[in-house]
Length: 99
Image (cartoon, rainbow, N blue to C red; front, top):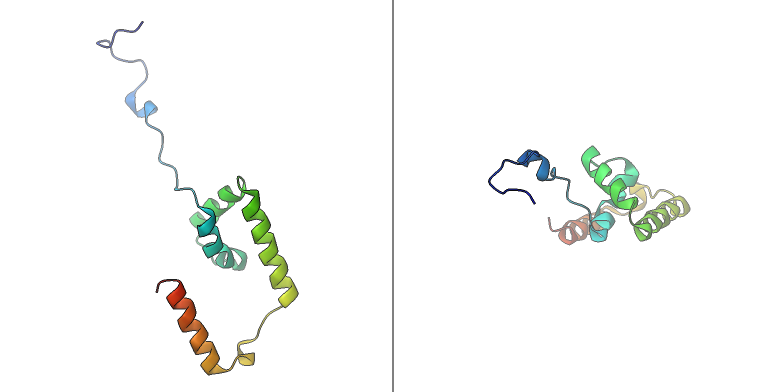
């Protein structure tokens, strides 16, 4: 039995875990996946996302489905979307994202 009055051989700083980045939730993955696939995600967010993928097979499948959808759909040129429709879509998207 150790004497509580005696100093510990382990420094207190060794007992406190180092702060780790907040783990992502699956909902956040859905919000970040487009930027991730376009390479527009901040490096620290990409690291967090990839750490999530290492532990979450459903999100890995989701990202792969999004990749396949992008390949199948190709690229929609902005000229193909009438300006008024594009404006309404952008407003709806911003409202959806809370901005």
